[in-house]
Image (cartoon, rainbow, N blue to C red; front, side, top):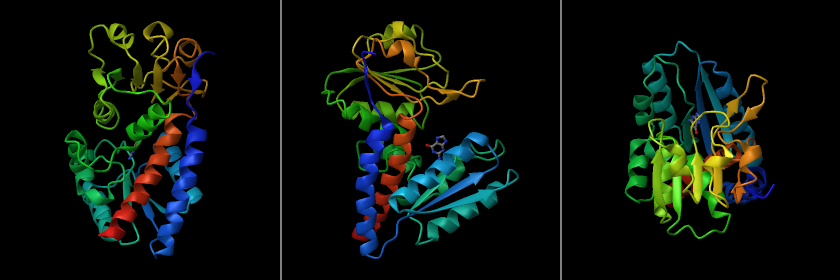
Length: 284
Ligand code: GUN
């Protein structure tokens, strides 16, 4: 293996220790940071994510509640639950686990969360702030991915960054963050004509496609920083990323593993966003 491993577990341990100190300082001032997670339905992957979020909260001392709602929940019921949490002073962060069951309107539900408690950074006010270079809540996965990229120590100014995937949750905010770092950013997606021609140019390559082992060694520039956002479960039960780790690690300069890479950092950033939301309340 020639690439250096960007280990999300190691980075997260250090960051979570710092977050725990901030939580303790808040508690001394009488504020106990609280996160509420709403889980609608029985999606198995969502159950695992939500459990890991709870474990993360416990680790740093954040109070967390999971509100489980049945698959048959109506839009009205969901929005009324969100409104109750908006008004609950013991809750500083609200997260609606996605995807929601098909009959529910995700965008409408997310719009009900007060932007100050939107620790996912999905509210259009926070997305708009990122677009405009203003201080808002930044979505956890791209925020965590950027933190990993920064920890390579590479000066990002003028570097070619390629983001594969154009979702509102990852691809678009990731591109904005890399632009803020003075990268020249290219966004690729399922309709991109010659994907490999773009990815081979990338000094920083972020894969958020949702296809197992999609990025192969021949698509990667030697020495590149390769960030794998994918979490794909194979039929064997094994979890792999969007990057073919075994071959790409021989070409890349830095690479994130799956599991133990970006996913772990996503939850760490959620904890950080929750603490930040509680801290901001205190200075108001
Ligand atoms: N589903 C997959 N990733 C996420 C995430 O980061 N936040 C929420 N709320 N749902 C998700």
